[in-house]
Structure formats: C-alpha cells, structure tokens
Length: 104
Image 1: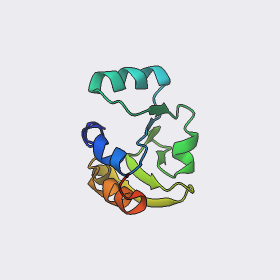
Image 2 (image 1 turned 120 degrees about the vertical axis):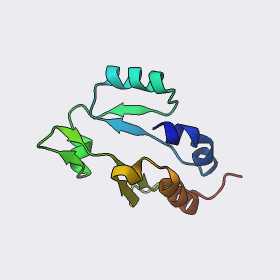
Image 3 (image 1 turned 135 degrees about the horizontal axis):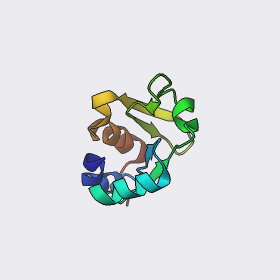
Image 4 (image 1 turned 180 degrees about the vertical axis):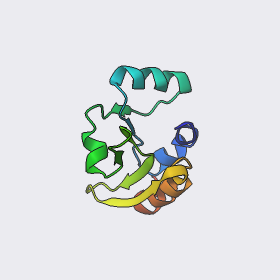
C-alpha cells in the first residue's frame, strides 16, 4: 500500500480512485492507514463478502489473498494482479492510464 501511496499523484492524473480493502476491522484498518501514512480510503471487508465475490478469499486460512483489481467506470474488471505482482502499482497504473487518460 505504501507503493500505491507513493504513486497516488500518478493515479490522480488518470482520474483514478485508489481504494484498499482488507478483511480486518474498520478500527484496525484506520490505525494501519495512519501508521503507514495512506491517504486513500482503506475499507473493511470484515464479513468477507467482497473478497469471496472477487474469488480471492482463502477459506482454509481465513484471509483474502493479495490482489489488485482495476475496474472501469462501468464496473467491468479490466485487469487483475495477484500475489507479489499486486504490490507493485506499475501494472495497475498502466491499465488506468489506458482507461482514464490524463486529466485536462
């Protein structure tokens, strides 16, 4: 998440909204965001509905696998990065650049 925060201006320039989602509680997410200096919203999927719907919930271990989804303004998933690839914002940014272009 720190890498996404470091590149937040790039995402803003492509008219992109960055969101983080975690299965941790709202309180835990708020504390974590403050600790690492994240300014974009960090949402709680405490009931695991979103992570299950997106197919990234690990039922055996009770957590969501790391993933980055780029979703266009019509709600269509345009790109998915998982695991270590999801940590680096370069792939997501490339897709956002193609979809959103630059703000005028």
